[in-house]
Amino acid sequence: MKKLNSFLLSASLIALLFACSKKQAAEIKPDGPTTVTTANVTYSNFAGALFQNKCASCHGQNGAIRTVWLFNGLASIKNDVRVANSVLVTKTMPKGSTLTANELALLQAWFDRNTPE
Ligand code: HEC
Image 1: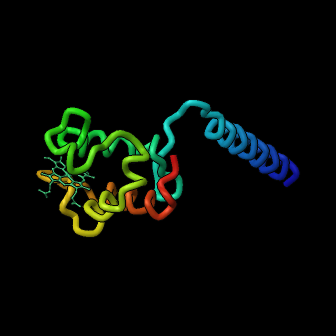
Image 2: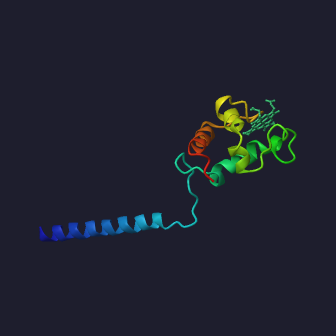
Image 3: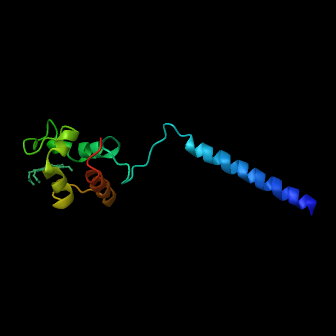
């Protein structure tokens, strides 16, 4: 019985040790990619690239539709209510393509959180 007890004790100690080192390994991840969620979405981790990829071909500096709306960074989105409206409410933009449900949810959250940089 005594033997069994000490076996169980060392087994649980070993298990504890492994649990600790595993947890540490998961936490020490200085430059690992962060998953973008509705809670942490920003201009630099998500929205900027989306507008660049989905809007700039028509609305960028050299785009044919730049006179209607010029996309040139965060301010050009923040200061024009038509942007959120066209993407999230009327869904008329991006013209010629669509956003996935996940992209729409992240954008909605980004606008709801006041377009953090
Ligand atoms: C293929 C070209 C094209 C792309 C890509 C595109 N647009 Fe447009 N956009 C247009 C055209 C053309 C108009 C003029 C109105 C119309 O024809 O619907 C317009 C108008 C607008 C307007 C002003 C009128 C309105 O709807 O209130 C906004 C704001 C706008 N686009 C935002 C965006 C955003 C944001 C994206 C990316 C998510 C985007 N557009 C992608 C072609 C494009």
